[in-house]
Image (cartoon, rainbow, N blue to C red):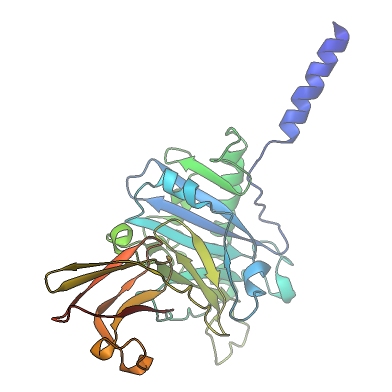
Length: 331
């Protein structure tokens, strides 16, 4: 019986050691990037650790990658409808000596949402260390609180070490520190929280939020007080999150395939494949039903539409019973 008890205790101890507690620590060097997600009136909130900030500050020019620490299926499980969901991505040096490249205490990394998909947001202005220190401390508290609550939750998709789902009645919930205005309890002079538009799910168009590095001002302050632009995060309606570094050529769009053309009276409906993201698709018709004509002579029919990841249809009205079509795609 004593031997059996000892084995049982050993198994329990091993199980405890393997618990998937949220990994964030405010003393990490370099600091980790966090994403906070919430919805007005929602039952739960998400805090996820996206890895060290060097993953984004050191991204190659023009590179793009999927942020797998925020699983799309988990995001859509917690928020079945993403319309109106608030998203903020952030990091901070909250402990002296914890920044890559010797950046000082109270360095911040914070998102600024775009109002237009293709236009970069206004770059944040850096503030004094005493001002940014308040925001840095609150960012660290968000991560530390999530880690504390994670230790009391069962392992699983809602608590896997990189991501933790917190009930809104949890004393360590994300909104308690972020505040109603989404600016870290009014400590940050900006609006870092992206509120996803009401037609997000139906439009098929992604949203983007820019990522900035804000080292605190030195004394005397420099003439240029603007932050450093690091790239943008893109969230698609299918729940996938990507990071795009600036510079370099835009990633090529996968070529669409026409999968059907239906004629009804004078209206031709062309259905084709798309991918989700920033890509837009246009329907082109050959001049005089001549598919060998140069592409510059093909005419665009109607307006361009965003990709959804599913087949999309565009229509053309022509009196000709014979027509040739192609679909163009742009980043």
